[in-house]
Image (cartoon, rainbow, N blue to C red; front, side):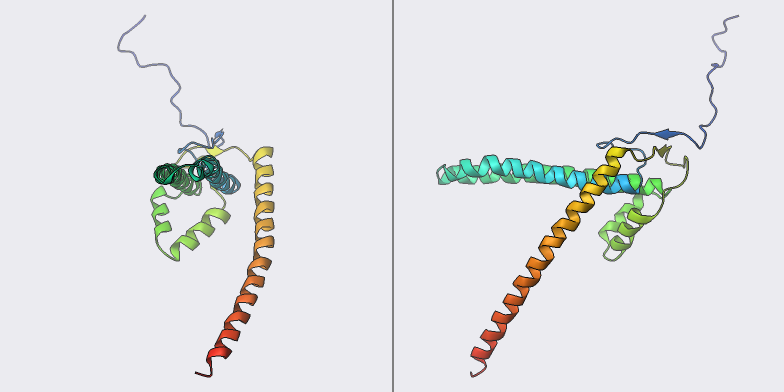
Length: 193
């Protein structure tokens, strides 16, 4: 018999602890693990530099060939593009922090500690190195294991960082040594006064 007040026959059992889901790069909900957090944050930063770099590559040559009035307009457009991109990066970065904190079964409100000196260093290290909770937690299902693409991106980002600092550090030290030598020479010149 078809009763209009009969309860539905849907299965309303609580999901098991083995449920997983596939995280998305531009999503602000769900959980992400350590490697995915690092790769997503680095990918977002590279995307920001790409957008600002392309805008600069297009606008700067056109500003140089234009008159004085057009330079101001071009600079305003460039500033607007950079500001909008920066706000987007900040929103997504904050979302990644909340997702990562949810993975370790912590409230997203803890991300406000990133505004507190010293506490932000501790929180950053916790988010990079603490394992996420196994299975589902109060913030949702566990993310699937890292795919080959995420692992490859992780290795590439690490190599880029090591290469960057491997080139930057010796150049910085050489320039600092030269600066220190010049400062010492000037100090000797003025010591007679």
